[in-house]
Structure formats: C-alpha cells, structure tokens
Image (tube, rainbow, N blue to C red; front, side):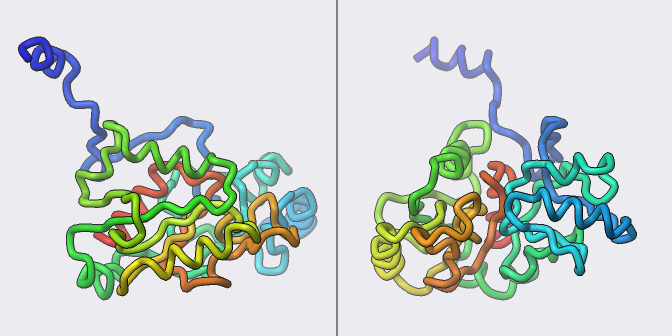
Length: 247
C-alpha cells in the first residue's frame, strides 16, 4: 500500500486540465478548415477535382465536413490558397446541414441548455455501436477512457447494454448486415434517448461513400441528435462535442 501511495505522488496527476485550461495539439493535426471565399474559381475547381470524397462545393465555396476525411489534399493546391486546416478541434454540430461549412460552425451549448441538460442532468450513459467500422473511430473513442482524458469525471460513461443507456454512439458506414442489429439496439434504449453519429462513415459513408453495400447515413435510419465529423474524430473533438452538447 505504501508503495502504491509513493508511486501516486511520484507520478502526479496524469489527467488533462481541459476544458478548464486550453490544450495544444501536434502541429500536423488538421481541424476545422479555414476557407478563402475570395479564392480564384479555377483553384476552387482544382481542389474539388482532387477531393476523393466530393466534399468541396465549388459554387457555394464550402466544405461538407460530414464527407471530408481531412486528407489535406486540397490544402496542397496553390499553397493553401482556398483551404487551410486550423488546430480547432471543436467541430460537432446538432444538424447535418450545419456540417456544410464556410469555415465556421454554430455553437452547441444553447441547444444543450434548452433540451438535453433538462433530460439527463449530470449523467449520460452511452452504448457504443460499431456498424462495420474499420476500428479507427472505435479506438479513438476508447482513448477517452484512459487516465489522460478520464471521460467518467464528467459523468459520461459507455455501458455494456443498450437497456442501461441514454443513447447510442454509432461509428462505421452501417453495412447491410449491421442495419438490423443497429435498429434493434436503438429500439432497446429506453426513451428519451439520443443518437450520436461519429465519424465520416456514420455521417455520409466516408471512404465507402456510394457503395451499394452500406447505408452510409445514420440519419436515414434513426433520428440523429449530434454529429461528430472526422476520419476518425480526434478524441478531443468527441470530448468537446459531448461536453458542449450535453453539459
């Protein structure tokens, strides 16, 4: 016991102070894109042509973050004349339409205050559903349970049974074989319940966009309350979205 106490003092606190204190990510991290609305149309078309996800809307000069995998190819065109990626990891939205961004996103806190905070208070239990994902989103979600992020300190936990959950956290493009299981899981969660679409696959199909073997849009099956873009979403993107939306 004394050895354990001594190790605890030697190691100190490993948990990040976020959100009380800002946190800096590695310089190569690609967050919310900055868009130059005055960019030459030819450059915009060139960016759209090389986008593997068809995420760039030329006429509107916007990027669909629900499709974007943050590969950075558009940033390499004309030295980022149209798009550059910031360090801003706060990219969650309450509607699918809000993900079609001109470089800014609406705040989540107001929606939370008016609705979900009254329903769930200080506790939120989620059932994670991997609907044919590649395990990247799942892995970065699991990171939230490590001592560094310590998701449980905010009253948010992932539980084993949907019957013990307040909602589902869905990752993956939702293959045909997983559709029935996903719906059954959703039905097993007692009302009122929330649905979170996490990652480009659950939002739009991601790299599998257009495949006849997937649904590729969670909102086409069940009503979605929170969208978290990314491929995969950074753990801080997920944490920020959960705290702003529910807390």
